[in-house]
Amino acid sequence: MAKARRRRPMSDINVVPYIDVMLVLLVIFMVTAPLMTQGIKVTLPEATSDPIAIEDASKFLTVTIDKTGGYSLDVEGDQASLELSQVAESVAKIAASNPDIQVLVEGDVEIPYGLIVDLMDRLQQAGVQNVGLITQPTQI
Image (cartoon, rainbow, N blue to C red):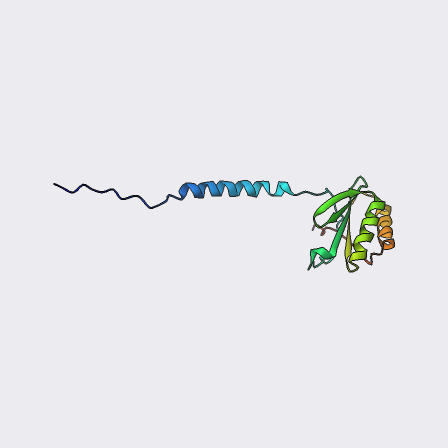
């Protein structure tokens, strides 16, 4: 009698379908990731200036003024919409605990210059020594 052929279990895994699924997911994440950024839409003024070297993000605090004149404060990635007096109070508290903090003002190009001056005056009264303006590089 001939020996019955034994079927050995197949120990190989076909990974081609998994690679296809992975590539589809990669494309989906690449398309949706830019859409998930949150923030306030601000058109920055253009200026020729050197970029600020950010070594430690915790040493910077961003105050944004949108084109409607609304203020928001960005503390460690969380943006809160506030009134000017609330911004000054919050910045004063943060500056008291961290005197080396630098405040960056991000103002829309369409807002009146007086709003930025008023904000910078309030920040100075709150005890902030380092105030910078965020601009966008000029388009050539």
